[in-house]
Image (cartoon, rainbow, N blue to C red; front, side):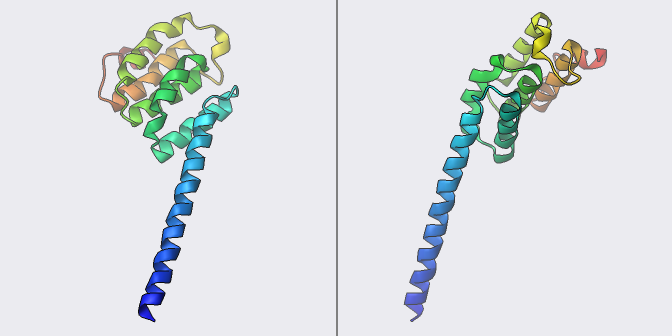
Length: 140
């Protein structure tokens, strides 16, 4: 009787784990697909979920879509990359700072402007202990 009860418990546990893994896989696939959305709010939400769930496998996609996004979403992506310890965070953050002055005003929304964007990207750089661009924080 004990062996039968133990077998049933183990079987239930196995199927619960398998079901959770399937849900997790589906959730990850949805989040990664949302990164390719044309709507900034959808992408932004997906980036937040990537940070929350620590989806390291999203790093290549984040790097791929970075330059196609509006500035606040780009800042969120750079923060996610820093949080996930992407090797390219510093390079992409500095490239962002170097290029943001050439951005059309359509890439900005909310209260973001060129100087505030440069200051905000420093959060990602500070997270990875890079302080070379901190002068934009002081200017802001």
